[in-house]
Length: 62
Image 1 (cartoon, one colour):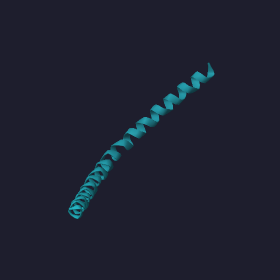
Image 2 (cartoon, rainbow, N blue to C red):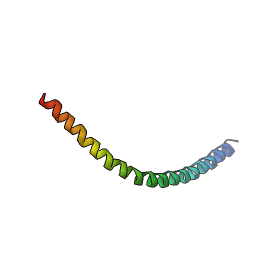
Image 3 (cartoon, helix red, strand yellow):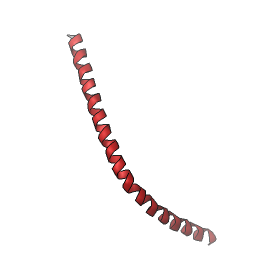
Image 4 (spheres, helix red, strand yellow):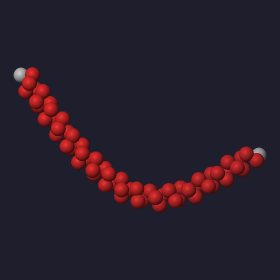
């Protein structure tokens, strides 16, 4: 009986690993799409960061 339970668990682990690989592939595909959009956001974020840096400089002068 212990052997059959072990076999069932091993089979379940293999199923979950296969499912995990498929999901990871989907995540990678989504990350590529979102990554393209984030590059535009990062460019905008850089401008915002420069403004914040200016504010910090102003605070330092007070």
